Structures are given as structure tokens and as C-alpha cells.
Image 1 (cartoon, rainbow, N blue to C red):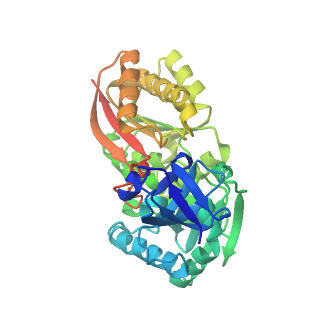
Image 2 (tube, helix red, strand yellow):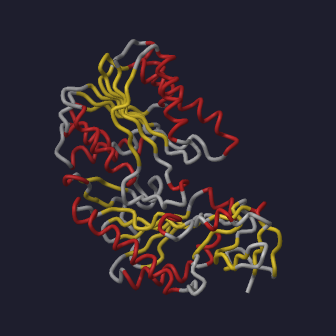
Image 3 (cartoon, rainbow, N blue to C red):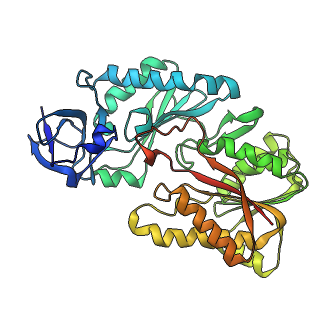
Length: 396
């Protein structure tokens, strides 16, 4: 048994059930745990606190598996956590007739560093921490038991694994390799093609599902600009909401090609859509110079902030694109703007958007605050689980 003994008064976050222990909180390590191995956590006074996984390469030195001293970390542990997560999502799946959803949202579902998404009969996994990498056999055995007829594919091809001392991994775990495209069904029967092997994240941004649908009500007769459009999810709902014209802008040609397929597959009018392979920052500036105007603009950029050192620079990036968007909006227009950077707090994001409006010379009101879909829950003791922030702003 390996023991992690905390410094004096450093157990307070664990008593509140927060699932992380940082390196500076540790006073002593008894034994020589290897990367990912299970360790027992004790207070400075010798009280047992939790059981977690050890990561010698990460500033998050321990991620907590359980606060129950009787709970062992084995295949049954993973099976119980997965079944519990699946039970919590059953109503959502049935109500919205979803064929794609997030099954495990890492720490918020009690499996730190673990992302599992379902796409029809494909399970796509991202293993992001040393602990879940060490336990991969138990995880995959549990998944096979619960979903015996599903294919399991790993997409641990992400740079964040380097922080845990891990190499990137990708490939079939069991069953068949995904085809080039998988068609999923979203809200209201919307059909979307997803590239599970090479697409962003596990293939698609499932967290934006409800927000895409929320755009529809603003688009009747509107000229819509969809920036960082990826495979055009927001544009599908804009067209369904009777937008008169939609501009899809993304730097990726393959993503734009999938966006075209999605529009045609849903029998929407592709003649009302422009596809622009452009750097969004440069394109927005050019539109401002040309005095172009739009009724609705969507800004759904990639993560600008990966660590605290990037917070200032990333904040400038968010302010820049929002200022340009405000300059492009007609009076009475609507901006739907997002940040998926976990280090960007909702309060800071609102301030940045407000400053952007001020610099653009417009007034605006927040008419909706948006967040990640309900299959991406946030555990109460783990505020870091809230990463997606969105605002719908109406310009006076």
C-alpha cells in the first residue's frame, strides 16, 4: 500500500470532496508508487481521506477515485461508475431521441481523466490521465460487459497526455474500426455526419447540442455568419430557422466538405449557404473593412487558453473576435458567442464581451446564458467541470 501524507491543513479541499491533490499539498510519500498506481491519502494527523491515482509528471499529483475506504479500484468499480452514469442519462436519451451523447464526463462522473462518448454503436474513449491509463484494462473490460455489442475505439491522441508523462494513442480496442463517416441523430431528428477517427475531440462537439438548437429562433429571414463553423452544426439550425443566407467560415477544407454533406443530408437549401475556407480573424477584419453587415453571428472558437500563462493572450483573442463581430452586426442583431477554455470564468468572459462591445461602439443586452449540454454535468464540488460558457447578446 502506497501512502500520500498531506501537509498540515491541506485536507480541506478533500473534505469538500474536490477530486484533485496538487504537488505542493503533499508532505510525504511512503513507498514508491509508479505512474497511475493507486495510493491512499492521509491527513497530517493520520486520518484516511481518500483513494486515488498517482501521477508523478503532473502538477495534479493525485486524482481521487473514491472517498469510500471500503471501495476497491477494480473492474467492478468501473462497471458501477459507468452504469450509474448511463442511468442518469436515460431520460435525456429517450426524450431527445439521441443516438450520440457523452457517457462519462471525467471527474464529474467519478472517473478522473476519462471521456467516453457514444455514437450509435461506437464507444469512443479519451484517456487523459496516468490513473485511467494504468486502469485501462479494467475500464475496457467493464465497457465490454455493459455494451457487449458495441465497438470500442480510442482517441487518446491529444497533447494534454504529455502533462501526465503519456504518449498519444489511437486505434481499435474491440470490434470494428469506425467507417469514414458515422451518421448520428440530434435534436428534432437532425442528422449529422461525424468523423470518429480524425474529427475534433472524439469526433464532434456534443456539448453544443442544445446551444445549436437555441440559435434557430433568431434566424427567420436573417443573414447569418457562422465562424469557426467546423462541420456546420449551428448552420443546420439556422437554415431550419429559415435563415435567408448563411456563411460557413472555417480554416479546414475537410470540415467544410462535411458541412456540405450535412446540409444536403437534412434536405436543407444549400443554395443559401456560402462555404469559406478562411482564417476567421483575418476574414472578420476584411468584412469590417468592406462594411459588411449580418443579422446573426456565431463565434464558437477553439480553446484559446491551455494554461494560466496563456490567460492574458487568450483573453485578448476573445476580445478581438467579439469586437469585430459587434462591428459587423446590424442594429437589433444577435451575437451568440462562446468560450470553451476552462480557465476562462463566466464572469471574466462576460467582462471581455462587454469590453468588446464598448470598443466596437455598440450597446448590448444578454438575453441568454448558455452552457454545456446536460450529458456534460458538473459535480458540485468540482467547479472546474464547467468549461463551456456562452452568451446570446442582442445589440441595441
